[in-house]
Length: 72
Image 1 (spheres, rainbow, N blue to C red):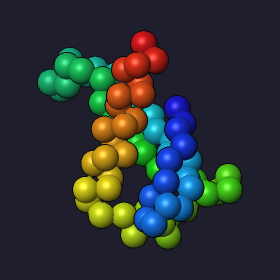
Image 2 (cartoon, rainbow, N blue to C red):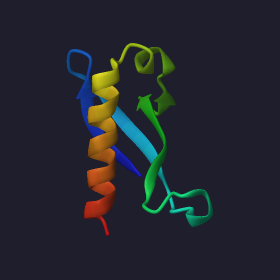
Image 3 (cartoon, one colour):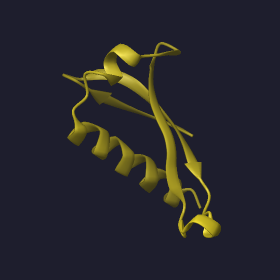
Image 4 (cartoon, rainbow, N blue to C red):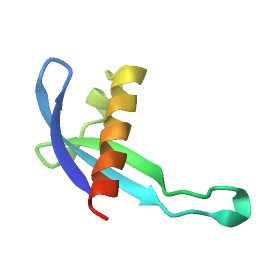
């Protein structure tokens, strides 16, 4: 899934993410954020990912999970 937002002084980005399904055999009972990454102009922006603080990543992860739950 994808959503648009801004990070680091209002840089527009696309946030791409994948949701993992519950894995009861290993103790994961709810869907979880399996992967998340940023793209700028259609290309992965690792340079920008490295500049985000832990708090910024948490906010993006929370937004991704909310978007996923709202789509259900």
